[in-house]
Length: 210
Ligand code: BEZ
Image: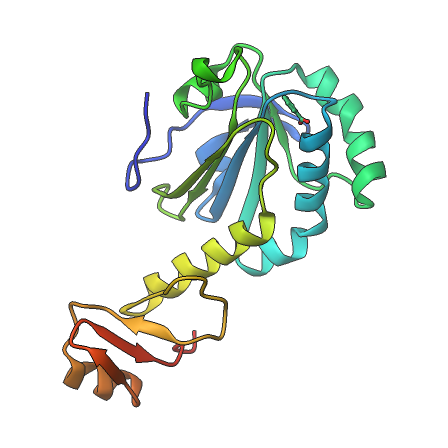
């Protein structure tokens, strides 16, 4: 099944390196980043999981729980976890789902047959507290993802949920943002103070505080 933005993130039960979980219960009203790995004991995946472990405080500050999935069995995940800690310098501190029957991978459309075999590509699903899919990324097996970009995307989602603004190209936290087209300039000035109108449809304002 193909998943689109705004769809409910499918629930599932699975064995993980942190024990058995039911996904929606485990997530329990938090944001989540669910991301797939083609296979255990592979180099790019090892660096990605190590980086995610290093960034655990950054994800936690944003109220985000990370969870990875690979079609290999739990025993392989548990053995590989030591390598992930060795390579990244931080012990694995989030669960990896064992998906040998490809239940999760199929529900989230993570297996792309044109990409070679029956393992997953590198999918990312950012899921909100209401279990809605809010942002997806799909990378091929040969290209590692940028987890700083995933954090930046979470920041943009959380900011644009909290205020009637959008984030422009290459936006970083603290930079100016765009007033929502649905808001009049007069209302924007009432709400945000200074507003710069470059075009009737492009109005800048400072990033609102949380
Ligand atoms: C890797 O993680 O390095 C990898 C995994 C599967 C295919 C290609 C690369």
